[in-house]
Image 1: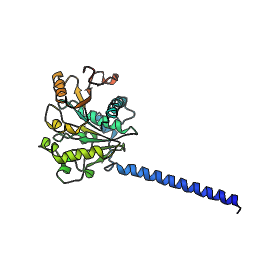
Image 2: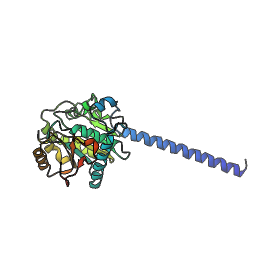
Image 3: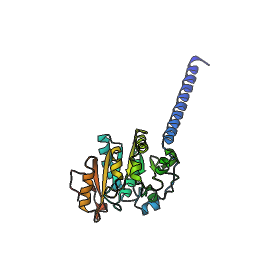
Image 4: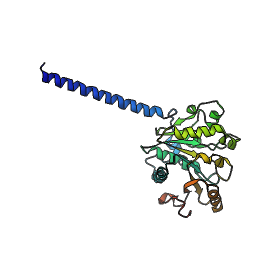
Length: 274
């Protein structure tokens, strides 16, 4: 074999070796990304979700784009302010805060640049799991009582970039639990663990119990949900007063008669809530 043939052979071997290492690094990176997402992957039924108005991840649903609009507006505001945690709440129950929180989280998970953790922090009346048809193995209540690790409580959806932290069993003295040092440490851990992760908290209503007030110091921003024809204007005003020391990034008017025919369904506070 002459020098030219030897040189060509060596170049070919070096190239093959480089390609093999490149493939191995890609595989390792993909594995690392998968492994970094906590919790086992669980299945959810599209039909069940659609029945419960959880439609953000359903490509064929004509209303899914509305949550992409909501996602874009929320993400722009959060990135501009370097926010990582968002609470979704309402003045009272039955105003749609949980469906908005789930749909928003799902839509954010479809963004290739983001992962999202949805935390059910309505400890007295947890419902995120029921909207998705899940039977959680454990939840925050189990973690705080020492019965499970936080990793044991995580449920990863098929969207891959979305994880749920259920509440678990109902907690009677919820405001005391939310004000505990253990909960403060958990909030810090959830916020700082992954640099690309946004944490969305489904919070209890503001006018029903004091849980939101107890936990608001751990929240960067709040999205307030009101339901047309149900939420009195006085309750919205009172809620905004309660949130006066917190950054309210916007309000969602839920169940609007023209909700699915217009884009301006996320109303920021520099505009009147109609």
